[in-house]
Image (cartoon, rainbow, N blue to C red; front, side):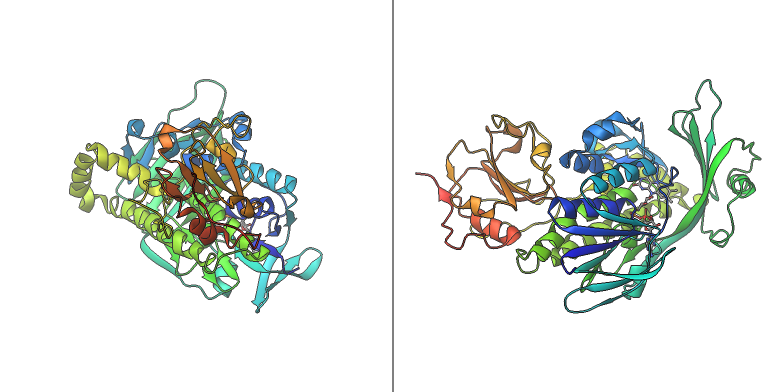
Length: 502
Ligand SMILES: Cc1cc2nc3c(=O)[nH]c(=O)nc-3n(C[C@H](O)[C@H](O)[C@H](O)COP(=O)(O)OP(=O)(O)OC[C@H]3O[C@@H](n4cnc5c(N)ncnc54)[C@H](O)[C@@H]3O)c2cc1C
């Protein structure tokens, strides 16, 4: 069983990764220590960028059927950013995390992922050809072997600890308690939040008939993790933060959270990799955690598949750390900066005044809205590529309609299969040469020119990022090196050259 991937953790990152691997035809085993899925979750919202990814995998219709709505506001350090200036991808959508997990688990099962609930990873050893993982379940101890192990086992990741990967902490720590309250019929409460000297308090409508009461206390650690969370703990925390004695009734579920914002020093140790909260755990403001885990998974899945199937170009798997670690660093800085702008309130008030003025500048507002979910990678232009790099190089491809004469109706649909896409918009001006030799890794799709894309030929990686873009069609000299750089040598040995027609 050296051709499969073992994934520790069946949260959003682990399930998404498993789906990505199965789409590429690679087996995945998910070890999840909880026995049953939970219909409660700390996470409250998904980011538009995650929805874009789900759309690229054909999951948009399932989400649309659910009760999901755009939250009217996006927070940054307890300022409300103005959403008017950005597109849908930078909005936040109310969608409790357990529903995202349920959707991904259903999808993973449909795709044939081996999900082993009630199985905990307790150890592993890696060698030259794979990783042997030790498991514990009600049936006893066991082993499962795979070519790679990915730790998607959350903030307290056992995989990360056993691999000896340092988890660097920085910025303020915090502690929070939340209680989900069932509301009586009648008018539903408004979204209310307040920033105080000790922390913050919020009453956030979660879904119809349900309200989340939530505190955050800065610089606090909270009780020991084994201490059960009680309504009294929530009440006491609200009292410490707001100075008022709250009436808390109808609580359905309680949870405690907090810690520091932390970032793994490396995302890879040989055949062991990290994704999601195992790699980065963030102060919660800005709906970044789940979003970042989904992006990790789509960045990693096809690269692991390429390694296992033997077509990965040299160094491809290392680009996972190379591309995602800087993004992780950036979102950690973003999270820590937010905390530094909130506490202690009396000291930071003048700074907050200044930031409030800066936020009046559209470019600043937009920058802060886009930053936490930005997933552009500084990809190099391919050898032989001509002219200035195209602005889409390294960026997620925008979702635009395509006229393919019966093929996919848009760029997102073109990515449903989870393979790379070579989009020929040149009207036949570019000879794609032996591009068919990458069949199975890259789908060639011909469509009418699309003004928004401003390109004759685009090569899109399975994770939706543009790896090569040729504005004019030119000589097409860069296309073949780009195909080889991301998708390895072509399957057919006597492949010819790619160049301009005529
Ligand atoms: C109060 C709060 C609100 C939040 N709100 C949002 C939000 O609105 N939007 C957002 O994007 N993010 C939010 N987050 C962050 C988000 O919840 C996390 O980033 C997200 O859950 C990370 O997903 P993951 O799959 O990496 O890890 P997890 O969701 O932690 O999943 C890890 C899984 O691994 C399993 N596991 C652990 N150890 C083992 C083991 N040894 N063997 C087998 N299984 C194991 C666990 O049972 C768990 O199912 C919030 C966080 C908190 C605390």
